[in-house]
Image 1 (tube, rainbow, N blue to C red):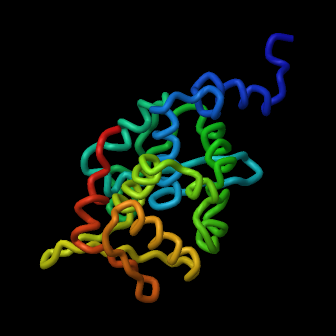
Image 2 (image 1 turned 180 degrees about the horizontal axis):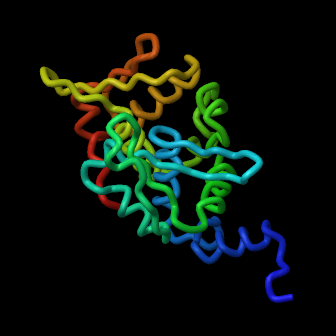
Length: 205
């Protein structure tokens, strides 16, 4: 039989071919995957149910088409949904192999459901193992999606409904990679103007 391989085997082979596994990833692909993981955490979601795993990425704050660069680097095409629906987020959904990409992100530590994401008490463990360059890529995507600008000041605010331990860890990461002041009051993280100048641009890799 020509196509009798189990789904898990086909998934692994697809991930290998796309460079989504550590032994097959280029530095550029690794950076893209870290950024996509940050995107799923800060402006997207993974749904893992009986129908398999699916990943969605919000494009509402992607002013510079940064997501298109990430998708191209990671080697997948995507379709855009809800582009004209003002009441719903515009989303990018992988056109093919989306379930494989979702499982790769889950294996990296991205929560597999919206409930798990909102109750997580820490960032995924892989964030602690990243190089300084990759942690900056992670932080920039998070700020791109969650950082709210203000007309009268250059600081940014990030408000996410997460447990305090999660928010404290996020503050620590943003402060460490920017080298500038980042603080938290309740559910609101305040990124100083100096930190924002480092973190706001999701620059090309």
